[in-house]
Image 1 (cartoon, helix red, strand yellow):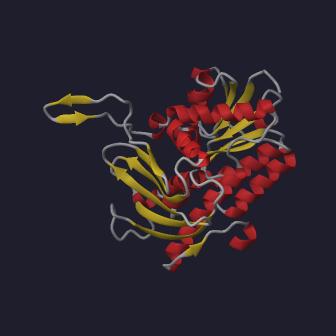
Image 2 (tube, one colour; image 1 turned 135 degrees about the vertical axis):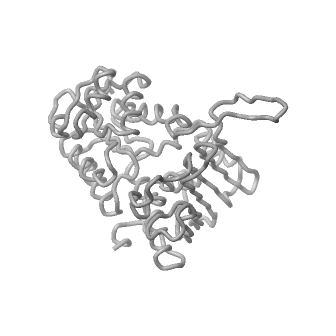
Image 3 (cartoon, one colour; image 1 turned 90 degrees about the vertical axis):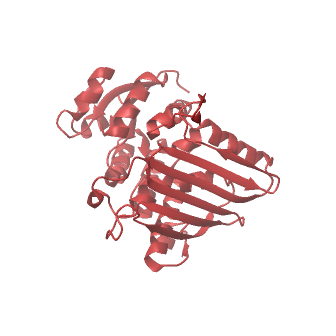
Length: 341
């Protein structure tokens, strides 16, 4: 075990990358942000300079750098597999935003590369690090709730939906949004695995659009008999909303409410609460905790709390949703690449 800070390079200076950079530099004591990489002119500099890190436009500049221990991948999802493999091949530990690839084959390739290199490979499923979700998992594991029978997870993005539906890639609601909920359901039902799904989705914001799906409800059947429901919406005018629920034979636990704090204002108009309007606002502490976990895993020479296997399992549910939408029926959840093929 080493006591020195983990030297981190961040790849991708977009919205979530910029948030990760600030978190690494200011909220994770065991991390030292060394560099920010982005090929877009000025993008890396805008994020790196205020944080005292250097800016690079080529990922090879950090993969070959002796002062980089780990790479945080926050680039476009279509580049995740290649970046993870390249980082692992260079001997760098890796934190990759979800999804870890755009297919089960890609995620398996990333997993194999990290295993062969002997590096830490963590995937960004932040709800596992949100205090109330972690406490709910503890209640399930302790047996306090009895046998798990029903689960629910939902994500509602703030605003009124995409301004241009044509720029949203097909199946985004499953592979980018509900992927968090699929992992949450898996997390809250330890020891079981998803068996099959029935997915229903449509565009309620742009009716009849050829590819956009902006609202979805998915029913997941688990190997222990439990039934899970995952819901997503791209248009929650009241704010960013993340919630979960587990019903067991001996009780129930709920988590999340979308409020930005415990402050409540009571007046003639009733009782009101301010809501969070972004994931980085609502889950601020969870984002810091997951990056702290990366550093702890690197320093302690152990696997991270959430890695490639969990990434594979969540994407397998997303892929089954695509299959369900394509066939109009129930679709099996793959447990291996061979099954997907």
